[in-house]
Image 1 (cartoon, rainbow, N blue to C red):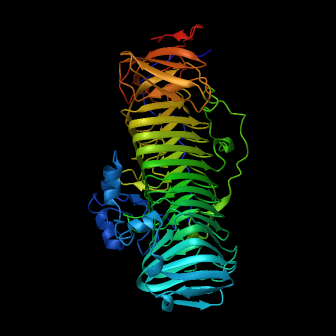
Image 2 (spheres, helix red, strand yellow):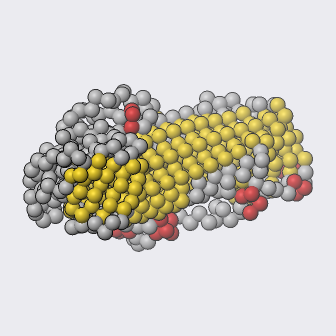
Image 3 (cartoon, rainbow, N blue to C red):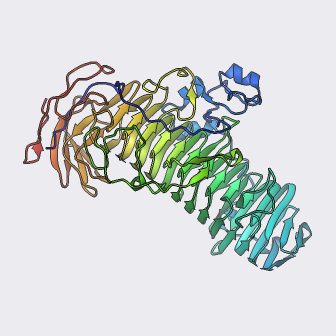
Length: 616
């Protein structure tokens, strides 16, 4: 029978429970530093600065550029941080966009002042005042001077190269189609500033070849490739097919703004900005064999971040939907991710028990409704040459994930959302995952002061939910899992399954401030979940999962709440501290201090009329 809502008291530290931590092994460790310049004292580049900052270099790396430790200053600055805090501390991107005009963002240009490059089969011609800065060698067009260059027509097997040291170059794609069977379609090798504009009302395509003629160390890796920072803007559309590796990639920063419509398909990563990736506008659809959005800089704590603003982004990826070495921020974004086939492709690791939240069974049950993962093997880091079996996450942030506003929907075969410091302060976050729904963990890295902890101890990571609407459905392991501390101080938070089991709705190794109710009623996907306080104030959300039990968090301790679902009736309980490891599917748990181990809760059944009350 379903059991009524109850309140539990205890901690997430429980003997015998193995906290899952997915760790990738690389020949070169990635930098885990948060982009938090406000945490003074963090610097990179030499062994001496690393030592003075308390930052550890990767063992055996004499260059001391591959960090493995998140400093205590960075950890403190990342805990409960706002999007504004994180962005203010990251590398300033204003210089990158200083050359962009309002006309660029609108997708308009002065044709009389621009140089027009007309593409025609395997040849091209240039006309206009800047034609002297364009050379054509067969089907290779090279731009060497400053100015605005309008590309129009079709190049069936060739490329456009920008090699203009220190010059401001603007490429306007005006119904341009460029295919290169042996390299990138556009290769920005050198420029003082580079802006790619999608002209209003135009459709443009870029396609590269499966193999590149240039296989050197600094060879391009994407259909639209830039060695320098580049800004992509306008209001036209662009379809990019990356047959070789990535679709759009910059070895420095990459900014997407204005209102472009981008459709990206890549055998590896969809859109990649090594130093940083900033997307503040547009409608973007990504299909990627590897990661959807990616930033990988690992020798500067102020880089390696992804900042998402008022854009509409849909990602289908073989590996992580969004992957950043340091930070991911979300502010006003509509983001939808299906990673590794989503929750339907979940597979259980050997030795891991689990209370599958998706089907709402009790702790230790094995879910029969699984399929073999079809996630592809991809290079986690192009330069590493190492192929890893993908562990597809919706969002994988090396240091922090911070959400201020927006609508984020993550469906992942592995964890839904992972980061050392997770801050949710607004918007909507919906997660369906094969493993942990939300996983606060140090991941591949070590947090200073927690170097010697075991898998059952506090690793220094912190989850903070202060506002917003959060819904989590998980198949294996835990709904909300913090290998460190967790604070759910507000918001509307619903997790499938029941708290109080080794693998269940909530698992916290360290300090916990999580108040709610857990247990009956049952819920079906599509149901309306209604939570009503004793003062009559209520809120609703539409369930994405089916479960015998559910857990509601973000409530006020000691207050009574009634939880009702369309198909499962209703139950009433008093909000109290919730965590894992106390056992029991019954009613009132024994009393005890927060941080203590709870005992077995007595059994209690929900009345058949659906009007259950707390059994304490």
